Length: 296
Image 1 (cartoon, one colour):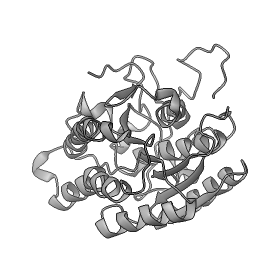
Image 2: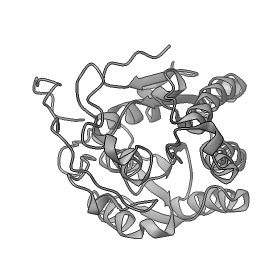
Image 3: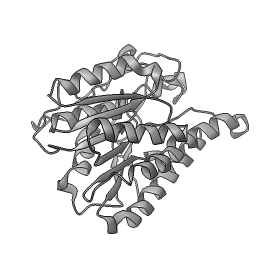
């Protein structure tokens, strides 16, 4: 768990102005300024996931990286998926997982390919010698100010990565998942309070919320729980690769009640809770980590 000492949430993490910056998608976290805090030095485990076997999509950076670090420090072996271009970030995560004495499996590939999603699950199950946590974080987000300028290729890619891949990964994983397994999707505050410049992304996140709640009801008789996390503005490579207009980067996140962007580590405890037996009576729920923006 993270430091329990009482701190002011307004300035507990970076709350200044971000330098204007841009990277070509998918971006490298190690080149961001300032670096996102994924719990590399701050997250402390307490044995909540001993013996668990987890697959995390988007596990090289941002929220997925924070989940991977936390899972390993809680005792889980972890397989992470990411795009091949993100290999430098993935190697760092591998070192952090192995430093905890846990097994780390790196599986690069594109989630918009159904056959890859099938291979991803099979490889994770084989190399981890089991699979009982699916943590689906990877996402596609590109800001477009006018629907008439939204390319069909972008629309298709957004739904393939954000929505279709969830169906493909879960379908491939179900034969392997035991009773007591946990599936965690990642929706967004955009599912409840959509931005006009993120129409395709917001729509895909609405779909994830519906997918989560429906799948939870379908899988409850099998003893498998399904929940989702809804982040607000979180400082990750997604933001500086076109998810936000470049002119919006300096004040990114300052519009929420807590007046700052969140850091990936601030979501880690929620993913751990939903992956663990502590949430044994929790399914079909969406947990907001939004800096104060309401979700319903």
